[in-house]
Length: 110
Image 1 (cartoon, helix red, strand yellow):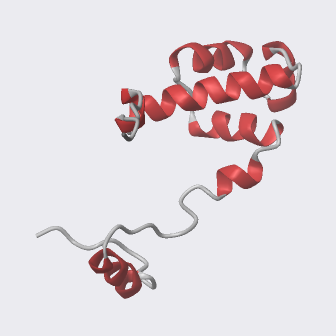
Image 2 (image 1 turned 180 degrees about the vertical axis):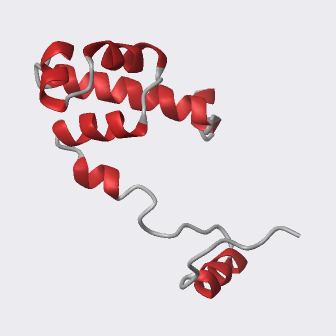
Image 3 (image 1 turned 180 degrees about the horizontal axis):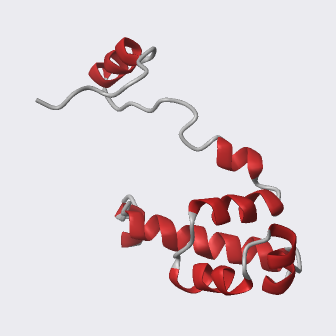
């Protein structure tokens, strides 16, 4: 008899809120692993310590500040590789990607 495997519901939650929650927790964990205080991270990045605290508690931060933190914690390569390669689920999506790979602007709405 096969054993049934159960997965936590979080694996199905691919919402922006869940992504922000994961990013803020990952940033905090990486900062703590490196033994860097919020105050020191603020000094290294130029991002105000209250902004770092707000990000770690609420997930709210500007993209520019987030990038400064990520780069300071040595995750530049991982960050710039986000959305680097096209993703597709069907052959039709792949064909659309190939048809549009040289586009400079989006399509007009009708």
